[in-house]
Image (tube, rainbow, N blue to C red):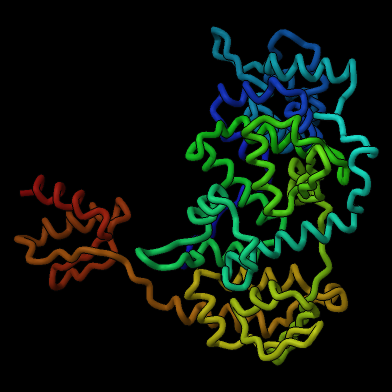
Length: 451
C-alpha cells in the first residue's frame, strides 16, 4: 500500500512546528499575533482574552475551573493548542505544580491591538495611479487559470505554453515534493504527486506552501520571515493594489513565485508596479474547513461505471485520465468509464481507492450531490475490491533461520522474536523460522548470547 502523505491543515500547523526562538520572533508582528488568535478554537480565544491583562502565572487547576466537567475534552484541546503555539508558556513551581503565563510579546502586541485597533500591513496604491484594476470576478478567473496551468505542467509540461515555465525556486520545491527523476530522464510525477492531483484546491495550496516554506533555507531565506510575510499577505484587501516598492528583497522574490500560482496578480504602470491579492492569498490564514473557496462539482457517476464530467477544462480531463478511461470530449462534456485496467494504472501510480472515491464525492455535480450515496454503492464497492485484489500478497524483506542445534534454542529464539514483534513464520517440526529483515542484526546478537 502506498503511504498517504500528511498535509498541514493551515499555516498554524507550520507555525507550531517552528523552534521556540523563531516562534517568539514571529510574535514581534501584530499581524502574526492576530492571525494566531483567529486560528484558535473558541475556548482558547476565551482563555487568551481572560489572561490578556494578567501578568502572574495562573495555576492549571484554576483554569480547569473556568469550564464545566462536560467540556473537559474541549478544555484540553484548547490548552494544548495554546501551549503548542507558545501563547501559553508552562511554568512549574517547587512543588512541580503546573501554571500558565502568557507569552510576553504576544501579550504586549494584543494589548496594543485592543487599545489602538488594527491597521493594514501597507496602504493601497491610490486609484489615480492604478487607473482600472481587475474586478473580483476577473481576479478569481485569473487565479483559477494560473492554478490550472500549474497543475497541467505537473501532469505534462508539453501541454502548457512555453511562457508559463516556473521559476527555479518553485521547481525545486515541486521536484522534492511532487516530482521525481532519474539520470538523464525527464521529471515525472511521484506517488505523492498523483495523490496531490486528487486533493481539493485548498489542500493542494497548503501542501505547496508547506513545501515552499520548508525549502526556504536551501534558497538562503529565513523560513520565519517567509511565514511572517505570507500571513501578513492574508490581511490585505482582496482586489486592492499594493506597491512592490514597499517589499523587501525576500518578499519581492516570494511575490513573483506566488504570482505564478495565482495567489497575486502583478501589474506594471507607467512608473510603478504593484501586486493585487486574489482570494487564494486572502484565505491563507484560514483553515481548510473555514475556507469559503468552495467550487461547484462537475462529475456524475452511473451504476454502469460510466462517468460524465460537465467541463471544458483540459485539467479536469487529465485528472480523470489518472483513474478512468476517457472516451471522448465534447465542448462542455467529458465522457469516460471506470475500468479495471484504468484503476490498476492508478494503483500503480500510488493512488488509493479511498482517494478516488473521495475525489468523485467532493466533485459531484449539483444534480447528484443530495443523493445517498453520492457515488453508486456498487461502483465504490468494486473500486475497493479491485484494489484488494492487488494487495492479496504483501512482499516483506525477511531472513530465514534453520539448523538449530537443539529444540530449546529454537523455542527461545521463537519466543524472543515473537515477544519483540520480529516473527513472521515458524515451523516447530523442522525447527525453521522467519523474521523481519530489519531485525536480522538483533537476532544474530541474541543467537550469539545463547551459544
